[in-house]
View 1 (tube, helix red, strand yellow):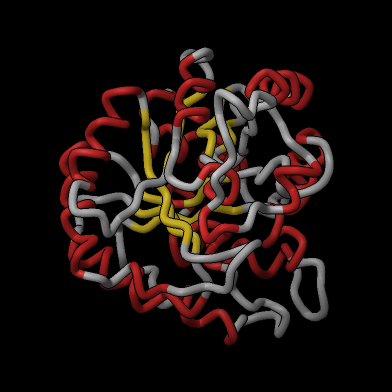
View 2 (tube, helix red, strand yellow; view 1 turned 90 degrees about the vertical axis):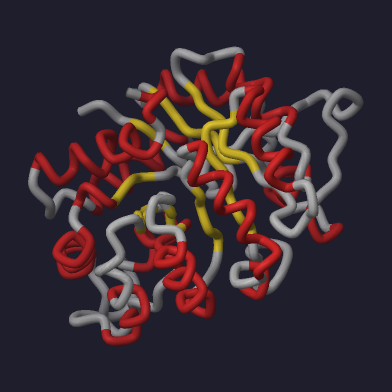
Length: 281
């Protein structure tokens, strides 16, 4: 199995060169308690047997300054690509996106909320952001969206409005799966299955949730594969935001997906990542 991680983070230990300036003005606890340099990530990948990674910029540490994720990944171009964040509502956002892409950025992410702020999907359907979507579609950059079920209508609108843009739903859109099969409370997630340019990112959050109450990995993940296809599903560790060693996080994902076929797991653990980020092929 060729393991590729599409959701680790890195934090510099040089705050003079890369000063923290967190989005929404509050720095995340994990970035201070479990900082992880690019060198430490490579070590963790080697230990876990992870070949390559698409490293996601920490908005709750650096705001819209992608310098560290770009510089760090450029040190290991044979193994890493950078996924950054920009102000989608800025007047010059197309030029900003192009500028970061020229420096090596391989994808973008919209952070509408999470560890430091409640979700607010209003940015997603703000017409001011559409010129940014046009640019990323032109450049072939996939866009990750960090939102909860509240943002699903906006995700559908964007996927339909920009059909050539690949959209990756962070943390699977944080569905409520605790009711168990057939997962009626996750209906808003499965309702998006008809969108061919929408991809699902499986992270420790969902691997933990399927162990609770009436949910189970054996009933949930085959349901997701049935809806979206393994070719539109990819694994992301969320390391070191999620606690534990990278090898432990991967082992948990392997156990959770053991109910799937070898071919399905090959897509989720590697081949889909290479579709989204061709530089990882």
